[in-house]
Image 1 (cartoon, rainbow, N blue to C red):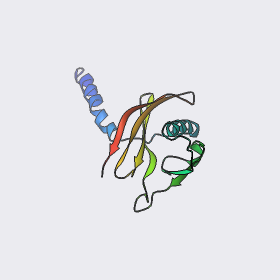
Image 2 (cartoon, helix red, strand yellow; image 1 turned 180 degrees about the horizontal axis):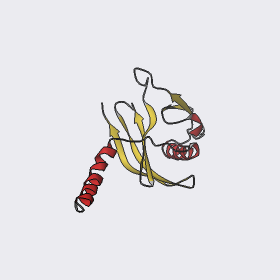
Image 3 (cartoon, rainbow, N blue to C red; image 1 turned 135 degrees about the vertical axis):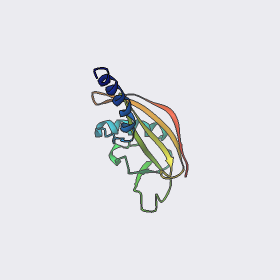
Image 4 (spheres, rainbow, N blue to C red; image 1 turned 30 degrees about the vertical axis):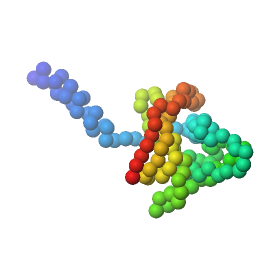
Length: 142
């Protein structure tokens, strides 16, 4: 009987991870951290322009206040309609946490269909984003 309890406990621990995998919790970061991440990533891809241009950004995970101010660049927030997005948009998705490291995807296209972009990794230390870097490519298809 004494040998049964440790073995039963071990089996219970080994069986627990598959139950936990199906339960993904939503990752929520403070506004200040999200502003740092969004601003840095967007300015990596989009630079000031000699002529006016509009960049369409999905409003799903991003607030307009988090976007940087760039000369001759106007960010237009686009909300998803029941039929999808009216045009291709820049968007952020898949905000996840693994240990102390976070990851987020920045991509262009249709978030529900075909899109291409990059996966960015970063850590947060005392409310400041640390070690923000591109890690992998991202792609999705219909």
